[in-house]
Amino acid sequence: MDWLMIAGIGGRVVVFGLGVWLVLRTLVSATVSFVLPRSAPDPITRLVFLVIRRLFDLRTSRVRTYAARDRAMALYAPISLLALPPVWLMLVGLGFAAMFWASGVESPAAAFKVSGSSLLTLGFAPVDGLGTTLLAFIEASIGLVLVALLIAYLPTMYAAFARRETAVTMLEVRAGSPPSAIEMFLRYQRIRNLTELGDLWATWEVWFADVEESHTSLAALAFFRSPQPDRSWVTAAGAILDAAALAASTLDIPHDPRADLCIRAGYVALHRISDFFGIPYNATPQLGDPISITRAEYDAACAELAAGNVPLKADREQAWRDFMGWRVNYDTSLLALAGLTMAPYAMWSSDRGLRPTRSKILQKR
Image 1 (tube, one colour):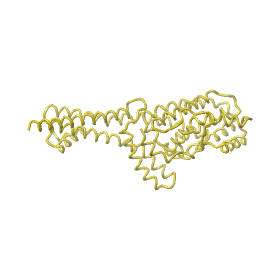
Image 2 (cartoon, rainbow, N blue to C red):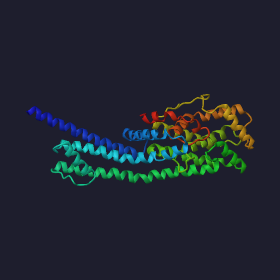
Image 3 (cartoon, helix red, strand yellow):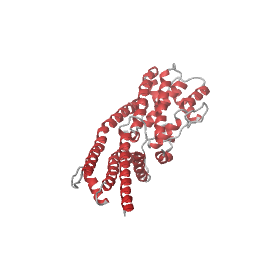
Image 4 (spheres, one colour):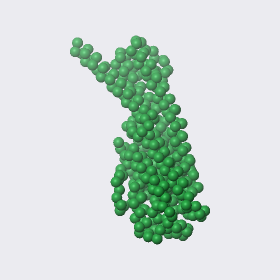
């Protein structure tokens, strides 16, 4: 009998410890997802987004038009984000139910009832004893903090979203819709303003730095779609990077180091975001490595620029090699992110995106 009593006490201690671990693990998940100011993937958050993405994939697999798919996917990130607090609350409730039962509540069902009453601050299940009362107070505080956490960070998230989309919207004026590096140069040439491209590179260098920080510390932002279905932060990034690469390699204009810095800021940002989602890419590309743009596509783009009187360098072979040397730095990450986010059609990015890999990418890490 003594051994049975010891085994029973030992079992309750183990259950109490498991409950404490579950609660602490949930609090870590909430902290990493909304408080920690750095890139740190969390398995609970990733699982929630993955499960909801699978449901959305089932829905969009029956849709035949991009417009309908975009309307459906516009709800993906908000719904996934709003699903996090209920999941966290459920896990905290299960953890405290285990602790209440281990502390002497007569049955698992009664422990679950006390836990739910305390977590939601309903108060319909009274507790007796100092230990269980203390647990009830702690659980009620945690429940309030988890709900307040999401509410408090929504303004931060939407502020970052607004900063991102302001630049994306302004790009339509310069590069058309969908954005195109070729169209941007043609428009600048028509207003005789190719010499003013340097300010654009400086602006987008800052934009890339902001996107890198916000889309890794608040990763749900990567899936928030633009207000207009034909816009996307990914295709905008691709258009600017291609424009800077063409300006540095192909256009016969004075070299501007700000274009080089913009490209570097861009591919570093895309690499950091790719790292967060577990997207593979070549971190040390070499000159001559293949890119997704063919020589025929490049020549066609040059012909269009020449027809618009955009000045081009005479040595086309060297210009092509230089363009490849720039593009190889961001080619894979750009295409994979276009597929992951189901970006709208745009030249040299989502028109060749890696869409079949998106579920595998979400499952990694």
